Image 1 (cartoon, rainbow, N blue to C red):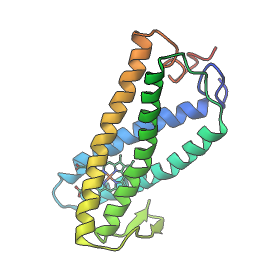
Image 2 (image 1 turned 45 degrees about the horizontal axis):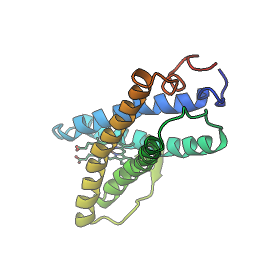
Image 3 (image 1 turned 180 degrees about the vertical axis):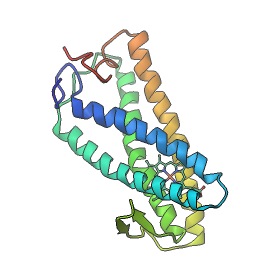
Image 4 (image 1 turned 135 degrees about the vertical axis):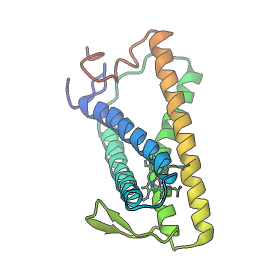
Length: 184
Ligand code: HEM
């Protein structure tokens, strides 16, 4: 299997971005819900710091992913009804938008709350906005609602992939699964 995508299947790098980032998003979402209910302690602060650092890392990864997608070719699309292709484009576009929006709203919330942001204990990152009680409420709401919408859109995307596999019986899912499957 090659690093670059072919007309039959996604390449290694596209698959690593897809599945690797999915695992990291699942971890961030799980930890996000878990940490906010914890009583105040040094451990809670460490978990928050980790969530924030990995969250900012996702911003960097999504920039690299978009660049790679732009440079890479894409496998040919299995013929589907035009309306289904339009929905798929909107869903994938929404996913990319949310992959940027979630870290940015988290970072903005952190800034509006007046907290410092030290990336993996190495760099101090700047605030995205001034500290403000009103902005803090809005950004918290945006980050939390964004996470719910993100999970719903990922769910839709996964259902569409399963429909391709089990109902249409085409290669769409196989082209993205890890391993050599679909790479013919
Ligand atoms: C892709 C990246 C990210 C994802 C998927 C994500 C996801 C989540 C989720 C699911 C929650 C729990 C929401 C709730 O309790 O309803 C959360 C909370 C939180 N996130 Fe993120 N997050 C990301 C990035 C960031 C970043 C970059 C920061 C800050 C720099 C951040 C700061 C926070 C904070 C401070 C909370 C706690 C909110 C509270 O006070 O309850 N997040 N995040």
